[in-house]
Image (cartoon, rainbow, N blue to C red; front, top):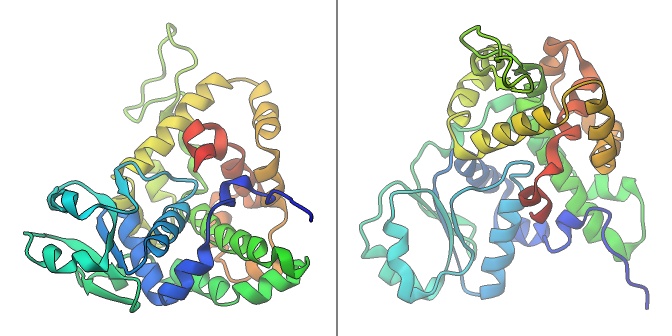
Length: 309
């Protein structure tokens, strides 16, 4: 018997195929868009294992961002009142509790039936959340995930590992296209034009308006404007600002690459057949091409929370 760890330990207990078997790709991307806007989402299924696996997989799709709100993969029926909270949450609920759920005063909640691949309740705007071109590019890769996993190689025993990697990389590339230019807008100057004081020479500030306006696509800019207000985006940028302060100077870039060789390597080995699906316009606009991708990967996984995902 041979035991081996997956190439990316972050995906060690993630089963994306369980998620794809329960939801169509179209519905899955609707759920993904809803989570990016930090909405309230309830998953229902007949089995505890299905609930826990699908909830865990959905959260993993958000990487390198981290869900900042309530997350309960399996909610006991005795605690059902939690779903009435006005704050965002991801909750898993056994189908046997659905009659009780319908009696509660729910507002603006997405209820996903994993057993029948459908929405029991929705806000009716889920189709229009994600930018159309980025969504299409993501769909193209996910539809070919098995073919791409086979092209990557490996024996049948590691097929699930290859599939998980393909799926995860597809969503990471979505975020690279969306926010990959953020390092250019973390500077030592505040948005009001004032530089950091001499008492804190290592201070870094995020130029929010410049970051948003740097995107040439109007639809992407509109989505980004909403996404920038979420706690997961705020936490992500705050971590990068603090990290930039800690690694200020000429040694910063070398240390960043030493800290995350796995993601630096990942950014260099995009499959050509996958790359052609993704829009080059954002990268071209930023005038840094592949260096943009290296930049986003070189600062992603330094927090304990990300490593634990």
